[in-house]
Length: 215
Ligand SMILES: N[C@@H](CCC(=O)N[C@@H](CS)C(=O)NCC(=O)O)C(=O)O
Image (cartoon, rainbow, N blue to C red):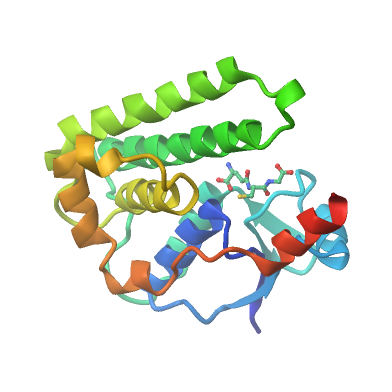
């Protein structure tokens, strides 16, 4: 029986989950429901009090949410292959640190973009600048630590690469590759892995329709 996952193709946190599932050969366990339709929104609000995607219904009437929790769950379902969570030592803390950094960069990129699209009268340039400086600092940190990203695939690496791909999707005007060449070379290798390529960012038709109707 497929597991219901609230998801749409533009959601970066959902993409993290899908890459992990694909990596573990579990890409076909989901039935997707988009929260960008009225029915989808009503359903996700029942299953996740925060009404955020991704959320995954793992038992009748019981959903787990937040990509970090769902990624852990998916990792626990794997039938073969190594866990993407190193069990001990610095490898464990590096993995979790990079997951937090990748996700945090997504938070900043999303917040800044939402602010950017506000009407001119209520747009807060300070808020955009603050989020962009977090992104900048995150990129700088990754550029200087790129050697630590080498080695076995972990959820931290999924999160970092996913955040960089999100910048290409939603912030194409940001020339981060020019200023972070080692990170760019690393990303060029990671984003070619089959599990990453299987889940490209795609604009959500349902979101576009929803936004057009709200105008
Ligand atoms: N920390 C959460 C973030 C989830 C999140 O913010 N999802 C966005 C879509 S990409 C959402 O559902 N936003 C709707 C809302 O905030 O009401 C995670 O990692 O899953």
